[in-house]
Image (cartoon, rainbow, N blue to C red; front, side, top):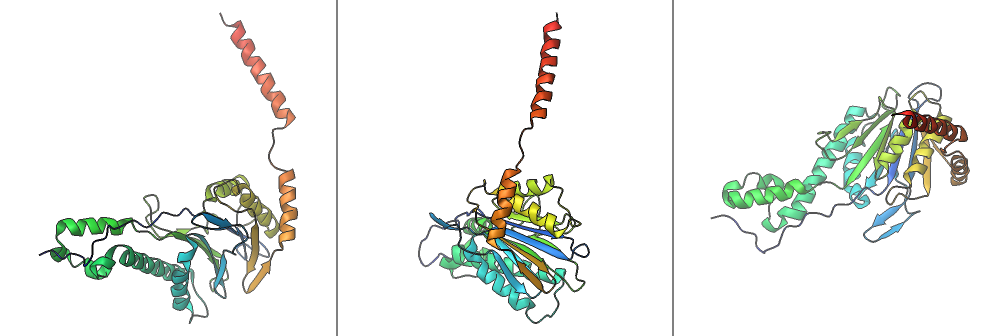
Length: 297
């Protein structure tokens, strides 16, 4: 006879939470390529119907040479980061592969925890026990529960940057696998920058427009990443307050908000506009087209 839960509860999908933030990390050139990382983010924290702009710094140190930026459901980060830190805590040097493996394992384990709590709790089964209980549950109930489990996803993304033993900056992100990217990991090292959060599309577009690369100077990268963040403030729930930090191996250089405000003033005064010469060229083109049309039989 198929097993039934001790009490009836309609299984609900965990609420989807948009990654209401923007986090940007870019590798750049100080004394040599890949020796500096610039991290920029907003500081807004949203929960249910409330939000606060100057609420939190979204960069965390997870190892003396590694940092992580967080977007999405901020409350879910703790258990994932705790497991990652515990995994790498005994290693004086952590390679990029080791850091990626630590994050993948922690991300998967937290997804299992969510499935256990949100779907399997009424059946008093763990995910491992559930996969072996098709005969006990019956095909219909088993398939229904399995469909509910597949809908459970971790609600936060991570942008990880740091310096492995070779001293060359590394940059990658962790998120739920998708059709376009069926992996938890997305590498950003070749491109030289990575962005996560609801403002990612605008910020990425800005960095592409600026042709940001890992051979850019630290000063140029600071301006470009700040410009990307300022542009992303038009996205849903990206806060206006900005945090910026510069990392080199064993060194953190914080950036004062007063300096960021001055740079924003410069950016606002130099935002793209339509030049008079462009309007003149368009008028001439339109007159030429109108003339051609008028001369047609």
